[in-house]
Length: 339
Image (cartoon, rainbow, N blue to C red; front, top):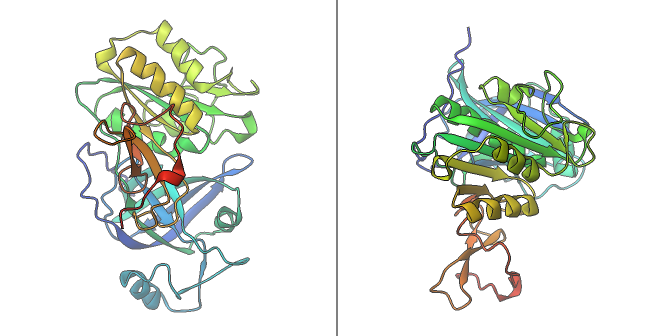
């Protein structure tokens, strides 16, 4: 029997990244453009919700398993050990962790991704037994405060993966959790449905298997109304809260997805004094703070402009919504790298 004990610690990880050789066990299409990729590796990776992996989208050359392991152990995960498929995919791709657990003495990870380009197209062709080079876990993770027993998880599009694992961890810590999941249309809803979602934004149902298996009800929204509630996911959250109010100092909101959506969620929380953590998304080349490309404007009263730049990969991707500069235009040309 498989040991599926989950890593649900609310203590911060030691932030030790390592090169990993991940073996694919499953790569399943869950809607028109989204897949769930499940992979295993021997070492304990010490990750927590909100962190991510950088995956190399390239195939291994014809070499033995021992050679592969040695190449990974020597941190050659991005080097000559790979040959490219379908043209050069030079940069690794960042993916949030949708789940981490121990299975048969190995670490098993879930990646939920949307096929949008050559890297993810290559990923969609992965089969059980294939090996993927990765680096991680990277970035920081969400906090799980014990004094906030109620939690809203607001995810849009490819912002759903960290919400799935976070729901598991919050429920394991005894929190009351409701997930709000948004998509443009029903065919792009990256969830496995076990029943019809409600069309009422005040009624959460156990209809999404990814959340229901951890006791988390969901309100599903689509922009065109083809599935669930018609409209924006942040509007559904507001309607639900109005119908099921709770003390602001007992609620915490987590959000990941398109930035306009996160901005709306953040402002709603800030106006009410509700704690909110946002998982920011940026284009990343390295994922470890070297390329300086994934900047986020963070408020700093001591800075001449009133804000400074932080790196989404190294300082984030999780930030306190109170710290993010949401409304001020960010003149990227004014940024001076610290070297």
